[in-house]
Image 1 (cartoon, one colour):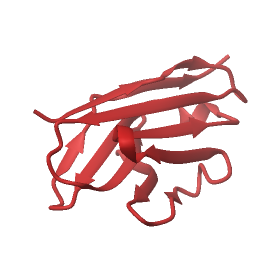
Image 2 (image 1 turned 90 degrees about the horizontal axis):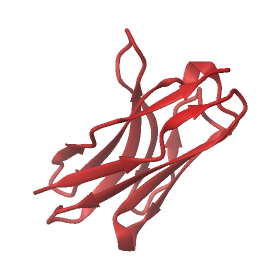
Image 3 (image 1 turned 60 degrees about the vertical axis):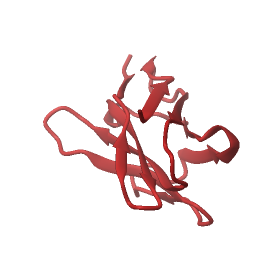
Image 4 (image 1 turned 135 degrees about the horizontal axis):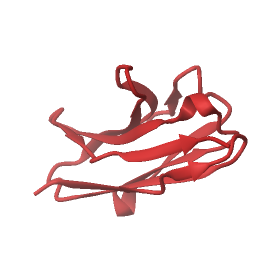
Length: 116
């Protein structure tokens, strides 16, 4: 059974930081990519950051220079370091994993709220 367990969300003031983690288990085949998406109320889910095996990270323009995606291959874990958070970053953040056969897996989501 494939599981993506996310953690690290919460409430933070504007300008603050959070670090999200997503640990993948039960994936039989090698991982092709790991990514973070987010969905704000009333909006479509959007890609925040993506890291493909052997490649460089990619970021949405809205988070470039503030967010950093990283991956621990030994632990099948992906992280999202979020700095200089803004109210518009408020959303449910979802972890996404694609294996080498292009099967997609999603985490359950973790709420990030940026507010005073």
